[in-house]
Length: 114
Length: 441
Image (cartoon, rainbow over all chains, first blue to last red; front, top):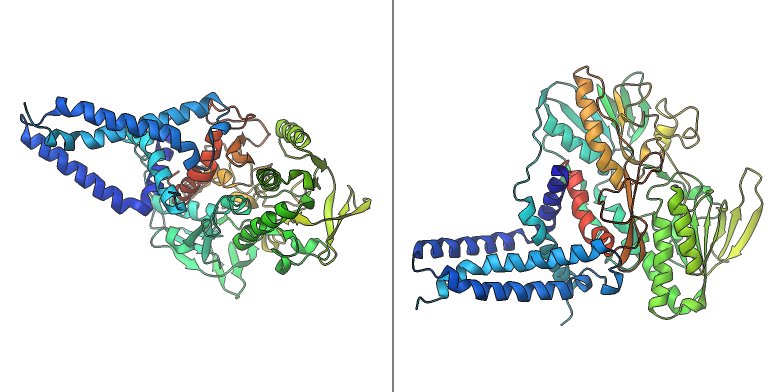
Protein backbone atom coordinates (compact mmCIF):
# COMPACT_ATOMS: atom_id res chain seq x y z
CA UNK A 1 0.00 0.00 0.00
CA UNK A 2 2.75 2.43 1.00
CA UNK A 3 4.62 1.54 -2.21
CA UNK A 4 1.56 2.35 -4.33
CA UNK A 5 1.17 5.66 -2.51
CA UNK A 6 4.84 6.41 -3.08
CA UNK A 7 4.54 5.49 -6.77
CA UNK A 8 1.39 7.62 -7.09
CA UNK A 9 3.12 10.58 -5.46
CA UNK A 10 6.02 10.27 -7.89
CA UNK A 11 3.63 10.10 -10.85
CA UNK A 12 1.89 13.25 -9.66
CA UNK A 13 5.21 15.06 -9.19
CA UNK A 14 6.51 14.07 -12.64
CA UNK A 15 3.20 15.07 -14.27
CA UNK A 16 3.29 18.45 -12.62
CA UNK A 17 6.98 19.11 -13.37
CA UNK A 18 6.30 21.01 -16.63
CA UNK A 19 3.84 23.31 -14.84
CA UNK A 20 5.62 23.38 -11.50
CA UNK A 21 6.04 27.16 -11.64
CA UNK A 22 2.29 27.55 -12.01
CA UNK A 23 1.58 25.08 -9.21
CA UNK A 24 4.06 26.94 -7.01
CA UNK A 25 2.46 30.28 -7.85
CA UNK A 26 -1.03 28.99 -7.11
CA UNK A 27 0.17 27.41 -3.86
CA UNK A 28 1.74 30.74 -2.83
CA UNK A 29 -1.44 32.65 -3.69
CA UNK A 30 -3.50 30.13 -1.73
CA UNK A 31 -1.12 30.32 1.22
CA UNK A 32 -1.30 34.10 1.18
CA UNK A 33 -5.11 34.13 1.24
CA UNK A 34 -5.06 31.55 4.04
CA UNK A 35 -2.68 33.65 6.12
CA UNK A 36 -4.74 36.76 5.38
CA UNK A 37 -7.92 35.00 6.45
CA UNK A 38 -6.31 33.72 9.64
CA UNK A 39 -4.91 37.16 10.44
CA UNK A 40 -8.38 38.68 10.02
CA UNK A 41 -9.89 36.30 12.56
CA UNK A 42 -12.33 36.73 14.14
CA UNK A 43 -13.58 38.98 11.28
CA UNK A 44 -13.02 36.32 8.65
CA UNK A 45 -16.35 34.78 7.67
CA UNK A 46 -15.42 31.12 7.31
CA UNK A 47 -18.94 29.81 7.74
CA UNK A 48 -20.47 32.41 5.39
CA UNK A 49 -17.93 31.64 2.66
CA UNK A 50 -18.48 27.90 2.80
CA UNK A 51 -21.67 27.71 0.66
CA UNK A 52 -20.05 29.69 -2.18
CA UNK A 53 -16.88 27.60 -2.04
CA UNK A 54 -19.03 24.51 -1.87
CA UNK A 55 -20.95 25.63 -4.95
CA UNK A 56 -17.70 26.26 -6.85
CA UNK A 57 -16.50 22.82 -5.79
CA UNK A 58 -19.78 21.26 -6.89
CA UNK A 59 -19.64 22.94 -10.30
CA UNK A 60 -16.02 21.81 -10.70
CA UNK A 61 -16.97 18.28 -9.68
CA UNK A 62 -19.80 18.11 -12.23
CA UNK A 63 -17.59 19.57 -14.97
CA UNK A 64 -14.81 17.11 -14.18
CA UNK A 65 -17.30 14.24 -14.22
CA UNK A 66 -18.64 15.32 -17.59
CA UNK A 67 -15.38 16.31 -19.29
CA UNK A 68 -12.76 13.93 -17.89
CA UNK A 69 -13.41 10.99 -20.28
CA UNK A 70 -13.02 13.18 -23.36
CA UNK A 71 -10.05 15.01 -21.85
CA UNK A 72 -8.18 11.72 -21.63
CA UNK A 73 -9.13 10.82 -25.21
CA UNK A 74 -11.83 8.32 -24.28
CA UNK A 75 -15.61 8.46 -23.82
CA UNK A 76 -18.43 7.31 -21.56
CA UNK A 77 -18.95 4.37 -23.91
CA UNK A 78 -15.64 2.97 -22.66
CA UNK A 79 -16.55 2.93 -18.98
CA UNK A 80 -17.07 -0.82 -18.96
CA UNK A 81 -16.06 -1.71 -15.43
CA UNK A 82 -17.30 -0.73 -11.99
CA UNK A 83 -13.73 0.42 -11.26
CA UNK A 84 -13.88 2.80 -14.26
CA UNK A 85 -16.89 4.57 -12.75
CA UNK A 86 -15.24 4.58 -9.35
CA UNK A 87 -12.14 6.17 -10.89
CA UNK A 88 -14.20 8.81 -12.67
CA UNK A 89 -16.25 9.62 -9.58
CA UNK A 90 -13.09 9.73 -7.44
CA UNK A 91 -11.44 12.11 -9.88
CA UNK A 92 -14.51 14.37 -9.99
CA UNK A 93 -14.84 14.41 -6.20
CA UNK A 94 -11.12 15.18 -5.92
CA UNK A 95 -11.47 18.14 -8.28
CA UNK A 96 -14.50 19.38 -6.34
CA UNK A 97 -12.77 19.13 -2.96
CA UNK A 98 -9.63 20.77 -4.34
CA UNK A 99 -11.67 23.71 -5.67
CA UNK A 100 -13.53 24.06 -2.38
CA UNK A 101 -10.29 24.10 -0.40
CA UNK A 102 -8.61 26.43 -2.91
CA UNK A 103 -11.36 29.06 -2.88
CA UNK A 104 -12.49 28.96 0.75
CA UNK A 105 -9.80 31.17 2.38
CA UNK A 106 -10.04 33.80 -0.37
CA UNK A 107 -13.82 33.98 -0.21
CA UNK A 108 -13.62 34.16 3.57
CA UNK A 109 -11.77 37.44 3.21
CA UNK A 110 -14.24 38.79 0.66
CA UNK A 111 -17.39 38.07 2.70
CA UNK A 112 -18.52 40.88 4.93
CA UNK A 113 -19.76 40.33 8.44
CA UNK A 114 -23.46 41.25 8.87
CA UNK B 1 -13.11 26.05 -28.13
CA UNK B 2 -11.01 22.98 -28.91
CA UNK B 3 -8.15 22.34 -26.51
CA UNK B 4 -4.59 22.14 -27.78
CA UNK B 5 -2.72 18.94 -26.83
CA UNK B 6 -0.65 20.91 -24.30
CA UNK B 7 -3.73 22.48 -22.69
CA UNK B 8 -5.35 19.09 -22.59
CA UNK B 9 -2.31 17.45 -21.05
CA UNK B 10 -2.04 20.14 -18.40
CA UNK B 11 -5.71 19.81 -17.57
CA UNK B 12 -5.47 16.05 -17.41
CA UNK B 13 -2.38 16.32 -15.23
CA UNK B 14 -4.21 18.62 -12.88
CA UNK B 15 -7.34 16.49 -12.82
CA UNK B 16 -5.48 13.26 -12.29
CA UNK B 17 -3.26 14.80 -9.67
CA UNK B 18 -6.01 16.25 -7.55
CA UNK B 19 -7.60 13.13 -6.03
CA UNK B 20 -4.23 11.54 -5.43
CA UNK B 21 -2.54 14.48 -3.86
CA UNK B 22 -4.45 14.44 -0.59
CA UNK B 23 -4.05 10.71 -0.12
CA UNK B 24 -0.36 10.92 -0.83
CA UNK B 25 0.51 13.83 1.35
CA UNK B 26 1.78 11.61 4.13
CA UNK B 27 3.67 9.16 1.92
CA UNK B 28 7.45 9.25 2.08
CA UNK B 29 10.30 7.42 0.40
CA UNK B 30 11.43 4.31 2.25
CA UNK B 31 14.65 5.06 4.11
CA UNK B 32 17.83 3.43 2.79
CA UNK B 33 21.09 2.89 4.63
CA UNK B 34 24.18 3.78 2.52
CA UNK B 35 26.95 1.24 2.19
CA UNK B 36 30.57 2.42 2.01
CA UNK B 37 32.62 0.84 -0.77
CA UNK B 38 35.29 1.61 -3.31
CA UNK B 39 33.94 -0.91 -5.80
CA UNK B 40 33.88 -0.02 -9.48
CA UNK B 41 30.49 -0.84 -10.95
CA UNK B 42 30.09 -0.83 -14.70
CA UNK B 43 26.60 -0.58 -16.17
CA UNK B 44 26.46 -1.60 -19.82
CA UNK B 45 23.50 0.25 -21.26
CA UNK B 46 21.71 3.48 -20.51
CA UNK B 47 18.15 2.45 -21.19
CA UNK B 48 15.44 2.26 -18.56
CA UNK B 49 17.18 -0.58 -16.67
CA UNK B 50 20.68 0.88 -16.70
CA UNK B 51 19.60 4.32 -15.54
CA UNK B 52 17.24 2.97 -12.86
CA UNK B 53 20.05 0.83 -11.43
CA UNK B 54 22.56 3.71 -11.58
CA UNK B 55 20.22 5.96 -9.60
CA UNK B 56 19.48 3.28 -7.03
CA UNK B 57 23.16 2.42 -6.59
CA UNK B 58 24.16 6.07 -6.35
CA UNK B 59 21.72 6.46 -3.47
CA UNK B 60 22.54 3.17 -1.81
CA UNK B 61 26.33 3.36 -1.98
CA UNK B 62 28.91 5.80 -0.71
CA UNK B 63 32.31 6.01 -2.38
CA UNK B 64 31.53 3.64 -5.24
CA UNK B 65 32.72 4.42 -8.75
CA UNK B 66 29.85 3.97 -11.21
CA UNK B 67 30.43 3.92 -14.96
CA UNK B 68 27.67 3.81 -17.55
CA UNK B 69 28.65 2.72 -21.05
CA UNK B 70 26.25 3.65 -23.84
CA UNK B 71 26.73 5.61 -27.04
CA UNK B 72 23.09 6.65 -27.31
CA UNK B 73 22.55 10.27 -26.39
CA UNK B 74 18.75 10.45 -26.59
CA UNK B 75 16.32 8.66 -24.33
CA UNK B 76 12.91 7.65 -25.61
CA UNK B 77 9.86 6.41 -23.79
CA UNK B 78 9.53 3.26 -25.87
CA UNK B 79 6.23 2.08 -24.33
CA UNK B 80 4.74 5.18 -26.00
CA UNK B 81 5.73 4.17 -29.50
CA UNK B 82 2.49 2.22 -30.06
CA UNK B 83 0.65 5.43 -29.15
CA UNK B 84 2.59 7.25 -31.87
CA UNK B 85 1.75 4.45 -34.30
CA UNK B 86 -1.93 4.67 -33.42
CA UNK B 87 -2.10 8.42 -33.92
CA UNK B 88 -2.89 8.90 -30.23
CA UNK B 89 0.23 10.84 -29.33
CA UNK B 90 1.99 13.44 -31.49
CA UNK B 91 5.34 12.35 -32.91
CA UNK B 92 7.50 14.16 -30.33
CA UNK B 93 5.76 13.02 -27.16
CA UNK B 94 7.84 9.89 -26.62
CA UNK B 95 11.11 11.86 -26.49
CA UNK B 96 12.56 12.28 -23.01
CA UNK B 97 15.65 14.31 -23.90
CA UNK B 98 19.29 13.56 -23.26
CA UNK B 99 20.14 10.38 -21.36
CA UNK B 100 22.46 12.34 -19.08
CA UNK B 101 19.48 14.23 -17.70
CA UNK B 102 18.46 11.08 -15.83
CA UNK B 103 21.91 9.93 -14.72
CA UNK B 104 22.79 10.45 -11.06
CA UNK B 105 25.46 13.02 -10.24
CA UNK B 106 29.04 11.91 -9.99
CA UNK B 107 28.95 8.97 -12.35
CA UNK B 108 31.12 8.51 -15.40
CA UNK B 109 29.40 8.18 -18.79
CA UNK B 110 31.46 6.48 -21.50
CA UNK B 111 29.72 7.39 -24.75
CA UNK B 112 30.50 4.19 -26.56
CA UNK B 113 29.09 0.69 -26.90
CA UNK B 114 30.38 -2.50 -25.31
CA UNK B 115 31.78 -4.69 -28.05
CA UNK B 116 33.18 -7.48 -25.85
CA UNK B 117 32.39 -8.87 -22.43
CA UNK B 118 35.21 -10.80 -20.70
CA UNK B 119 33.67 -11.92 -17.43
CA UNK B 120 36.58 -14.18 -16.49
CA UNK B 121 38.89 -11.14 -16.61
CA UNK B 122 36.21 -8.77 -15.21
CA UNK B 123 36.61 -6.45 -18.17
CA UNK B 124 34.61 -5.05 -21.04
CA UNK B 125 35.98 -3.64 -24.27
CA UNK B 126 34.22 -0.86 -26.11
CA UNK B 127 33.90 -0.49 -29.87
CA UNK B 128 36.65 2.12 -29.84
CA UNK B 129 38.96 -0.35 -28.06
CA UNK B 130 38.80 1.05 -24.54
CA UNK B 131 39.24 -1.75 -21.99
CA UNK B 132 37.38 -1.12 -18.75
CA UNK B 133 37.86 -3.22 -15.63
CA UNK B 134 35.04 -3.68 -13.14
CA UNK B 135 34.36 -5.22 -9.78
CA UNK B 136 30.66 -5.60 -10.53
CA UNK B 137 28.85 -5.52 -13.84
CA UNK B 138 25.22 -4.79 -14.65
CA UNK B 139 24.24 -5.87 -18.15
CA UNK B 140 21.45 -3.58 -19.34
CA UNK B 141 22.12 -3.52 -23.06
CA UNK B 142 18.58 -4.17 -24.19
CA UNK B 143 18.09 -6.38 -27.20
CA UNK B 144 18.90 -6.42 -30.88
CA UNK B 145 16.35 -6.02 -33.68
CA UNK B 146 17.30 -8.38 -36.50
CA UNK B 147 15.55 -6.81 -39.50
CA UNK B 148 18.31 -8.27 -41.68
CA UNK B 149 17.08 -11.78 -40.87
CA UNK B 150 14.11 -11.01 -43.14
CA UNK B 151 15.31 -11.43 -46.70
CA UNK B 152 14.79 -8.27 -48.75
CA UNK B 153 14.01 -6.11 -45.72
CA UNK B 154 15.44 -2.60 -45.74
CA UNK B 155 15.02 -0.50 -42.60
CA UNK B 156 15.62 2.65 -44.64
CA UNK B 157 12.44 1.91 -46.58
CA UNK B 158 10.23 2.01 -43.48
CA UNK B 159 7.51 4.63 -43.58
CA UNK B 160 6.96 4.37 -47.33
CA UNK B 161 5.14 2.10 -49.70
CA UNK B 162 2.92 0.59 -46.99
CA UNK B 163 5.95 -0.71 -45.04
CA UNK B 164 5.68 -0.01 -41.30
CA UNK B 165 7.38 -1.09 -38.08
CA UNK B 166 6.71 0.38 -34.67
CA UNK B 167 9.93 -1.06 -33.22
CA UNK B 168 12.66 0.52 -35.35
CA UNK B 169 12.65 4.08 -33.95
CA UNK B 170 10.25 6.80 -32.82
CA UNK B 171 10.34 8.17 -36.36
CA UNK B 172 9.35 4.78 -37.68
CA UNK B 173 6.56 4.54 -35.11
CA UNK B 174 5.26 7.97 -36.12
CA UNK B 175 5.45 7.09 -39.80
CA UNK B 176 3.44 3.95 -39.02
CA UNK B 177 0.55 6.24 -38.13
CA UNK B 178 0.92 8.12 -41.43
CA UNK B 179 0.72 4.82 -43.28
CA UNK B 180 -2.25 3.61 -41.20
CA UNK B 181 -4.01 6.92 -41.78
CA UNK B 182 -3.47 6.59 -45.54
CA UNK B 183 -4.49 2.91 -45.54
CA UNK B 184 -7.72 3.50 -43.65
CA UNK B 185 -8.85 5.83 -46.40
CA UNK B 186 -8.10 3.48 -49.26
CA UNK B 187 -8.45 0.05 -47.67
CA UNK B 188 -6.90 -3.09 -49.10
CA UNK B 189 -4.95 -5.93 -47.56
CA UNK B 190 -3.21 -5.34 -44.22
CA UNK B 191 -0.72 -7.91 -43.00
CA UNK B 192 0.34 -7.69 -39.37
CA UNK B 193 3.31 -9.80 -38.28
CA UNK B 194 5.09 -11.06 -35.17
CA UNK B 195 8.28 -13.16 -34.92
CA UNK B 196 8.84 -16.52 -33.27
CA UNK B 197 11.54 -15.15 -30.95
CA UNK B 198 11.17 -13.51 -27.54
CA UNK B 199 10.41 -9.85 -28.13
CA UNK B 200 10.09 -6.65 -26.21
CA UNK B 201 6.53 -5.55 -25.49
CA UNK B 202 4.93 -8.64 -26.97
CA UNK B 203 1.62 -6.80 -26.93
CA UNK B 204 2.77 -4.09 -29.34
CA UNK B 205 1.97 -5.93 -32.61
CA UNK B 206 -1.48 -6.77 -31.24
CA UNK B 207 -2.09 -3.19 -30.13
CA UNK B 208 -1.16 -1.89 -33.58
CA UNK B 209 -3.55 -4.45 -35.12
CA UNK B 210 -6.42 -3.45 -32.85
CA UNK B 211 -5.75 0.23 -33.46
CA UNK B 212 -5.59 -0.19 -37.23
CA UNK B 213 -8.94 -1.99 -37.16
CA UNK B 214 -10.51 0.58 -34.84
CA UNK B 215 -9.20 3.52 -36.84
CA UNK B 216 -10.85 2.03 -39.94
CA UNK B 217 -14.17 1.73 -38.12
CA UNK B 218 -13.78 5.33 -37.02
CA UNK B 219 -13.85 6.57 -40.61
CA UNK B 220 -16.34 3.95 -41.81
CA UNK B 221 -13.98 2.04 -44.09
CA UNK B 222 -13.62 -1.22 -42.17
CA UNK B 223 -15.39 -3.27 -44.84
CA UNK B 224 -12.81 -2.14 -47.40
CA UNK B 225 -9.95 -3.92 -45.65
CA UNK B 226 -8.87 -7.48 -45.12
CA UNK B 227 -6.70 -7.66 -42.02
CA UNK B 228 -4.63 -10.71 -41.15
CA UNK B 229 -2.31 -11.30 -38.20
CA UNK B 230 0.54 -13.76 -38.75
CA UNK B 231 2.83 -14.76 -35.93
CA UNK B 232 5.81 -17.06 -36.00
CA UNK B 233 4.92 -18.19 -32.49
CA UNK B 234 2.60 -20.99 -31.49
CA UNK B 235 0.29 -18.56 -29.68
CA UNK B 236 -0.98 -15.01 -30.09
CA UNK B 237 0.31 -14.13 -26.63
CA UNK B 238 2.60 -15.91 -24.17
CA UNK B 239 -0.07 -16.11 -21.48
CA UNK B 240 -2.71 -18.66 -22.43
CA UNK B 241 -5.73 -16.82 -21.07
CA UNK B 242 -4.82 -13.82 -23.24
CA UNK B 243 -4.01 -16.01 -26.23
CA UNK B 244 -7.61 -17.25 -26.02
CA UNK B 245 -9.04 -13.81 -25.35
CA UNK B 246 -7.19 -12.11 -28.20
CA UNK B 247 -8.21 -14.92 -30.55
CA UNK B 248 -11.87 -14.35 -29.67
CA UNK B 249 -11.48 -10.61 -30.16
CA UNK B 250 -9.79 -11.10 -33.55
CA UNK B 251 -12.64 -13.36 -34.61
CA UNK B 252 -15.30 -10.92 -33.44
CA UNK B 253 -13.61 -8.08 -35.32
CA UNK B 254 -13.04 -10.00 -38.53
CA UNK B 255 -9.25 -10.23 -38.19
CA UNK B 256 -8.00 -13.57 -39.46
CA UNK B 257 -4.99 -14.98 -37.65
CA UNK B 258 -2.36 -17.57 -38.46
CA UNK B 259 0.04 -19.19 -36.01
CA UNK B 260 3.56 -20.45 -36.72
CA UNK B 261 3.90 -18.30 -39.82
CA UNK B 262 7.05 -16.23 -39.57
CA UNK B 263 7.95 -13.46 -41.94
CA UNK B 264 11.13 -14.59 -43.68
CA UNK B 265 11.16 -12.47 -46.81
CA UNK B 266 9.71 -9.33 -48.28
CA UNK B 267 9.68 -7.79 -51.74
CA UNK B 268 9.20 -4.15 -50.87
CA UNK B 269 8.71 -2.99 -54.46
CA UNK B 270 6.17 -5.68 -55.32
CA UNK B 271 4.51 -5.44 -51.87
CA UNK B 272 4.74 -9.17 -51.34
CA UNK B 273 5.65 -10.96 -48.11
CA UNK B 274 6.96 -14.48 -47.71
CA UNK B 275 6.02 -16.51 -44.64
CA UNK B 276 7.59 -19.76 -43.52
CA UNK B 277 5.91 -22.45 -41.47
CA UNK B 278 7.40 -24.15 -38.41
CA UNK B 279 10.77 -25.91 -38.55
CA UNK B 280 13.88 -25.25 -40.61
CA UNK B 281 12.23 -26.66 -43.75
CA UNK B 282 8.84 -25.08 -43.12
CA UNK B 283 6.49 -24.58 -46.04
CA UNK B 284 6.67 -21.14 -47.64
CA UNK B 285 3.72 -19.03 -48.70
CA UNK B 286 3.51 -15.55 -50.20
CA UNK B 287 0.99 -12.86 -49.39
CA UNK B 288 0.39 -9.62 -51.25
CA UNK B 289 -0.23 -6.58 -49.08
CA UNK B 290 -1.10 -2.90 -49.25
CA UNK B 291 0.04 -2.30 -45.67
CA UNK B 292 2.40 -4.46 -43.64
CA UNK B 293 3.54 -4.13 -40.06
CA UNK B 294 6.93 -5.81 -39.70
CA UNK B 295 8.12 -7.03 -36.32
CA UNK B 296 11.66 -8.36 -36.68
CA UNK B 297 13.13 -11.39 -34.93
CA UNK B 298 14.92 -10.26 -31.76
CA UNK B 299 17.97 -11.56 -29.91
CA UNK B 300 20.60 -10.48 -27.45
CA UNK B 301 23.10 -7.99 -28.92
CA UNK B 302 26.05 -9.77 -30.52
CA UNK B 303 28.42 -8.61 -27.76
CA UNK B 304 26.41 -10.54 -25.17
CA UNK B 305 25.45 -13.37 -27.47
CA UNK B 306 29.08 -14.13 -28.37
CA UNK B 307 30.36 -13.84 -24.81
CA UNK B 308 30.59 -16.25 -21.88
CA UNK B 309 27.67 -14.41 -20.33
CA UNK B 310 24.99 -15.91 -22.57
CA UNK B 311 23.04 -19.09 -21.98
CA UNK B 312 24.89 -22.01 -23.55
CA UNK B 313 21.99 -24.45 -23.49
CA UNK B 314 18.24 -24.44 -22.98
CA UNK B 315 15.48 -22.29 -24.46
CA UNK B 316 17.40 -19.00 -24.13
CA UNK B 317 20.63 -20.19 -25.77
CA UNK B 318 19.38 -19.67 -29.33
CA UNK B 319 18.91 -15.95 -28.84
CA UNK B 320 22.09 -15.60 -26.79
CA UNK B 321 20.20 -14.12 -23.84
CA UNK B 322 21.95 -13.36 -20.56
CA UNK B 323 22.18 -16.34 -18.23
CA UNK B 324 20.69 -14.98 -15.03
CA UNK B 325 18.85 -16.65 -12.20
CA UNK B 326 15.26 -15.61 -12.84
CA UNK B 327 14.54 -14.93 -9.16
CA UNK B 328 17.71 -13.08 -8.11
CA UNK B 329 18.66 -11.63 -11.55
CA UNK B 330 22.25 -12.51 -10.68
CA UNK B 331 24.33 -14.29 -13.31
CA UNK B 332 24.31 -18.04 -12.76
CA UNK B 333 28.06 -18.50 -13.32
CA UNK B 334 29.55 -15.05 -12.62
CA UNK B 335 28.18 -13.83 -9.27
CA UNK B 336 29.53 -10.30 -9.74
CA UNK B 337 27.35 -9.89 -12.85
CA UNK B 338 23.67 -8.93 -12.81
CA UNK B 339 21.14 -8.40 -15.57
CA UNK B 340 18.21 -6.05 -15.94
CA UNK B 341 15.56 -5.57 -18.63
CA UNK B 342 15.17 -7.04 -22.09
CA UNK B 343 18.59 -8.73 -22.16
CA UNK B 344 17.71 -11.23 -19.44
CA UNK B 345 17.18 -14.82 -20.49
CA UNK B 346 14.10 -15.27 -18.35
CA UNK B 347 10.59 -16.35 -19.32
CA UNK B 348 8.38 -13.56 -20.75
CA UNK B 349 9.17 -10.18 -19.13
CA UNK B 350 10.57 -7.75 -21.70
CA UNK B 351 8.73 -4.55 -20.81
CA UNK B 352 9.38 -1.36 -18.86
CA UNK B 353 7.23 -2.82 -16.08
CA UNK B 354 9.70 -5.70 -15.79
CA UNK B 355 12.43 -3.11 -15.25
CA UNK B 356 10.29 -1.44 -12.60
CA UNK B 357 9.92 -4.78 -10.81
CA UNK B 358 13.51 -5.91 -11.35
CA UNK B 359 15.47 -2.72 -10.62
CA UNK B 360 15.08 -2.77 -6.81
CA UNK B 361 15.96 -6.48 -6.80
CA UNK B 362 19.15 -6.01 -8.86
CA UNK B 363 20.29 -2.91 -6.96
CA UNK B 364 19.55 -4.57 -3.61
CA UNK B 365 21.34 -7.78 -4.53
CA UNK B 366 24.35 -5.96 -5.95
CA UNK B 367 24.69 -3.94 -2.75
CA UNK B 368 24.45 -7.17 -0.77
CA UNK B 369 27.07 -8.78 -3.03
CA UNK B 370 29.43 -5.88 -2.26
CA UNK B 371 29.02 -6.81 1.39
CA UNK B 372 29.56 -10.52 0.63
CA UNK B 373 25.93 -11.26 1.42
CA UNK B 374 23.68 -13.61 -0.52
CA UNK B 375 20.58 -12.39 -2.37
CA UNK B 376 17.58 -12.10 -0.10
CA UNK B 377 14.70 -11.31 -2.46
CA UNK B 378 12.91 -13.19 -5.20
CA UNK B 379 11.70 -11.51 -8.37
CA UNK B 380 8.43 -13.03 -9.57
CA UNK B 381 8.98 -11.73 -13.12
CA UNK B 382 6.26 -9.09 -12.86
CA UNK B 383 5.38 -7.81 -16.30
CA UNK B 384 2.65 -5.45 -17.33
CA UNK B 385 1.29 -4.63 -20.73
CA UNK B 386 -1.73 -2.35 -20.95
CA UNK B 387 -3.15 -3.79 -24.15
CA UNK B 388 -5.05 -1.15 -26.10
CA UNK B 389 -8.11 -2.76 -27.65
CA UNK B 390 -9.53 0.37 -29.26
CA UNK B 391 -9.10 4.13 -28.94
CA UNK B 392 -10.29 4.93 -25.41
CA UNK B 393 -10.03 1.48 -23.87
CA UNK B 394 -7.41 -1.07 -22.82
CA UNK B 395 -6.91 -4.32 -20.94
CA UNK B 396 -4.66 -4.15 -17.89
CA UNK B 397 -2.49 -7.23 -18.52
CA UNK B 398 -0.17 -8.19 -15.64
CA UNK B 399 1.55 -11.55 -15.22
CA UNK B 400 4.58 -13.26 -13.73
CA UNK B 401 7.37 -15.58 -14.97
CA UNK B 402 4.99 -18.51 -15.14
CA UNK B 403 2.17 -16.70 -16.90
CA UNK B 404 0.03 -16.40 -13.76
CA UNK B 405 -2.07 -13.25 -13.67
CA UNK B 406 -0.86 -10.91 -10.90
CA UNK B 407 -3.26 -7.96 -10.93
CA UNK B 408 -1.95 -5.10 -8.84
CA UNK B 409 -5.34 -3.36 -8.73
CA UNK B 410 -7.87 -5.90 -7.47
CA UNK B 411 -10.91 -3.88 -8.60
CA UNK B 412 -9.85 -4.03 -12.26
CA UNK B 413 -10.95 -7.11 -14.20
CA UNK B 414 -7.85 -8.01 -16.27
CA UNK B 415 -9.97 -9.59 -19.00
CA UNK B 416 -12.41 -6.73 -19.48
CA UNK B 417 -11.83 -3.52 -21.42
CA UNK B 418 -11.21 -0.61 -19.14
CA UNK B 419 -11.29 3.17 -19.34
CA UNK B 420 -9.00 3.28 -16.31
CA UNK B 421 -6.40 1.06 -18.00
CA UNK B 422 -6.53 3.38 -21.02
CA UNK B 423 -6.04 6.47 -18.85
CA UNK B 424 -3.11 4.75 -17.16
CA UNK B 425 -1.50 3.76 -20.43
CA UNK B 426 -1.92 7.09 -22.19
CA UNK B 427 -1.47 9.55 -19.32
CA UNK B 428 0.00 8.00 -16.17
CA UNK B 429 2.61 5.46 -17.19
CA UNK B 430 5.06 7.89 -18.80
CA UNK B 431 5.45 9.82 -15.52
CA UNK B 432 5.68 6.47 -13.72
CA UNK B 433 8.46 5.48 -16.15
CA UNK B 434 10.40 8.66 -15.35
CA UNK B 435 10.02 7.87 -11.65
CA UNK B 436 11.43 4.39 -12.36
CA UNK B 437 14.37 5.96 -14.23
CA UNK B 438 15.13 8.13 -11.23
CA UNK B 439 15.05 5.03 -9.05
CA UNK B 440 12.10 6.31 -7.09
CA UNK B 441 9.51 3.76 -8.12
